[in-house]
Image (cartoon, rainbow over all chains, first blue to last red; front, side, top):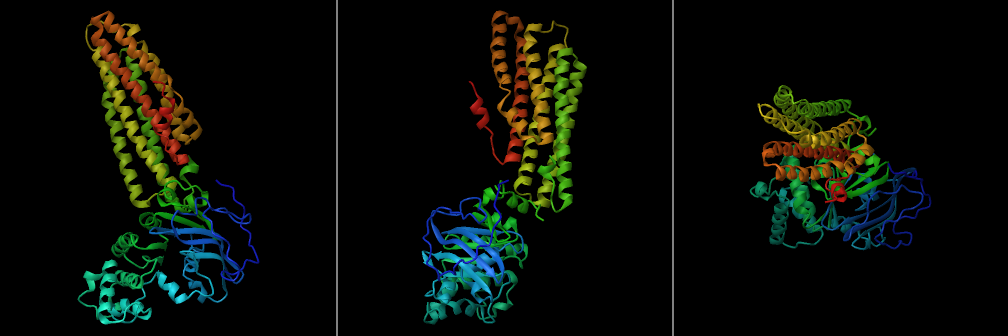
Length: 295
Length: 236
């Protein structure tokens, strides 16, 4: 077992975009007051670069000095027990935490080199670039067609009906849903099955041409067959998108991701190739969690 | 072993792995008894014992099937990960080696029957000397491997996997000696072939014992040392 120093809260960290950003280098640096992450946090071709990210909910230090690259065209799985901070970290990646009262994010998160917490950053645009799929499918109370066309329209990506039709068909095909819904595009999205609704939400996300898709337990409300379809879809989407997925299912993490990050009490304990994490993890906490010895 | 397989939040999982480990140890004891009995049958020229060994091989095979069933059930029920996955993989592979040890012991027993179940003169003591020497080495290796497997003692397994080069060396020199016997007196060809086959079986049992030690290293350390240790230690 590795010897690790207990994480110590570090007061006075500047908010992202307020303090001058620290320069990014692609080697893992570890502060003396933080838990050392086991494994390589960097990748050769990062799409998002997170350095020394901290999240506080009021007095609670929910994410502690987390640094992690998210590579292009890879699926990164984030696992860990409830309350470990994996969803909180995920939500930092497209500033979903901005809407939570008392939530402070510090550190640095860059998308293609751009500081996403910069004051000049258009958050609406950011959330198109970094889309999100939630645990519970949440289609708009509109037709299947409008569910997909709405985003591109408000972002000015489409200007007429024929462009909308093209985007809707392409997105639904990419989401593996086209053949199932092409005859009933005018029917409500909420009338689809749970699995279809979730794939509709994925189609809606990719319709605006994101670079990164965040998925927060996207299959936890789905049956095994619907889950398999979404997992198959994740594998296909990886060719064009970068995906970060939070999941409680370790089998799912093992099936869909190339890298896995294990969070524990706000610390990023270990990150590594998924095949390695699930056969021979290096950190005792990771091993205890994935073998069911946690708690 | 307890630290390797216990401590799950689901206690029944601990129990299932304990039962599996006990079944493998039981099979190890069966394979060990078969090997030692085959050596005893050779030494005592005891064809009755040899026939019993051949018959008992079926019990070893049946134990392999029972363990395989248990392993499949645990994988289906628990989807083992990390250390548990390595433990199950190691036990599954060890079972294959134990079954083959049983097969080799039965082959030795078959040769004992072939050599002694006739009215002709048996092989000379000098011709069978290598069997005695190699038999002692094999018995020690098997004991080491099974004890390391019982305790999941990685240090013992590492010593075992890296050491015991004597058996291979002994086998090579026995081949040279046995060839000399044939060249000197062609009437010994029949016995020499049987003795050669027995020494080959003993050499194989040694290899299987070493495999078991390597699985322990994989289980405990997550490091696959197969081929590396042997190649590093090879003197040929």
